[in-house]
Image 1 (cartoon, helix red, strand yellow):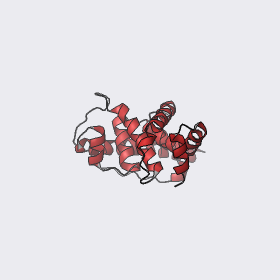
Image 2 (image 1 turned 90 degrees about the horizontal axis):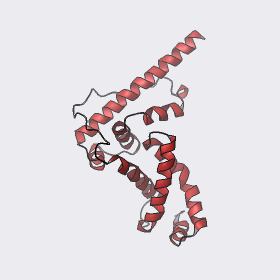
Image 3 (image 1 turned 90 degrees about the vertical axis):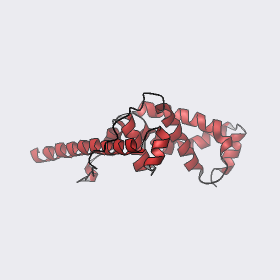
Image 4 (image 1 turned 120 degrees about the horizontal axis):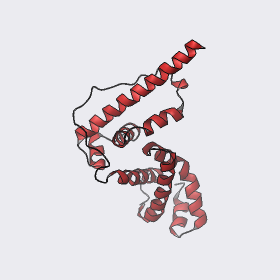
Length: 183
């Protein structure tokens, strides 16, 4: 295991090892923070909070399975904790809108920054469900348990998130198509 020696040194409060671990994990954990945060600044705060929690809970890592996987789960759960407060995640109807498939005609012309921005702009409950379902492969049952919502609400939030994203991607593509035609 790549991390084993570093983890043992971190457990002994070795500052150099802690810095090494931070440098090894920070880029991956920051990308996770960006997915679950509303903006860049909030993602930076979540990264800092996540590392404080990681170093606090490092002694609970049992060296079973992937350390990166353990750290990723720790970061995600820490971010989700901020949304578990009453009233933060609005309860929406369990009524499902029509399932939406997003067809991206020319993927290379949609900047990654734009895609990240439209996901970040989703309402909290839609963004969290979308990320957990699409990027982390959680089931609706698991999402419902994590966010303390019903399975139907999870499904509804995913469908609504997809609809919003579909509309924004289509708008972006149409605007770029108009720019190309007018040039």
